[in-house]
Image (cartoon, rainbow, N blue to C red; front, side):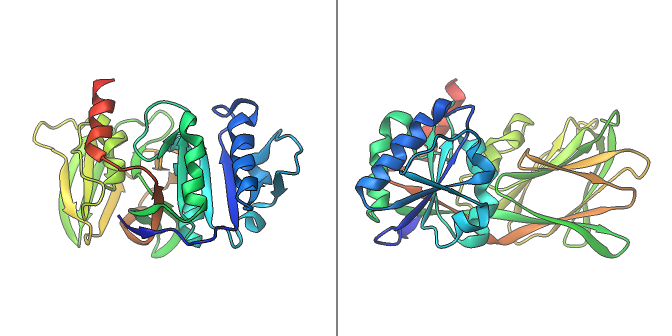
Length: 290
C-alpha cells in the first residue's frame, strides 16, 4: 500500500448495487458530499436503473462516465467491487468501497462512515494495489476468449456434468491431475472467497502468490497448492463433459472439448482506496467468527 490519490478530485463515478442501496439513499448522500467539495458526480446509465432525477448526479453512458474519472465509488459490497474492477483496472481508476451488506474484505467504509469519503475527495487516501489475473481460452491454436479477474478463475462442470477429469499444468509441467468438481485459481485477494470455502489456503493480500485449489477432488492425495505469481497456469477438462469458466463468480463462459484455459498474473491492477488504518488480519478474524 503506498502513495495518495490524485489531488483536487474533479469527477467521481457512483456505482450502486440497487438491491443494497435501497432507493439510492446512500448514492444521493454521496452525491451531496461530492457537491459540497465541488466534485462532479456521475452514474453510468447501464447501472442507473430507476435512479431519481437530481441536479446532483449526471447519468451518462459507461464510456463517458469513466472518461477522466478520478474515483469509482462502489456502493454495495465486495460483489459490487468485483463487478466494476475490470472497468477500473483498464482505465487505472482507483476504487473506494462502501459496504452496505455483510462484512467484506475489500470495502473500506460502512454506510454510517460515508462522510469520510471527503478525505478521498480531498486527495487524502492511500492506494492499496491488488493483483489481477489475465485469462485466455485457447481453441485450435487461437484465442477465443479473454478476460480479467480480481478474485479467481474457476473451471467447473456445466449443465449436468459436475464431475470432471482435470489437468493443471504450470510452466509446461504437469502439476495436478484429478477427478473432481473443478479447480480454482485465485489471487491473494481471492484466497478468502471461493478458494477458502473449498479448503484452500488464506494468503496475505499483498503476497506475490497464486492459489490453485481443487474442488471436491476424489483423490485424498490431491491438495491445494501455492505458486509464485510468476507462474503461468494451464487448465484442461474432460473432452467428453460440459465445462464452464467462471470469472470472479460473475461471468460464465462455455469451455469446449480440447480447449485450454491459460491463467497468469495480469499487468493490470485494481487499486483500492484506504482512508482508515487497514488490517487484513482484523477483517479476517471478524469474518471467521461470523
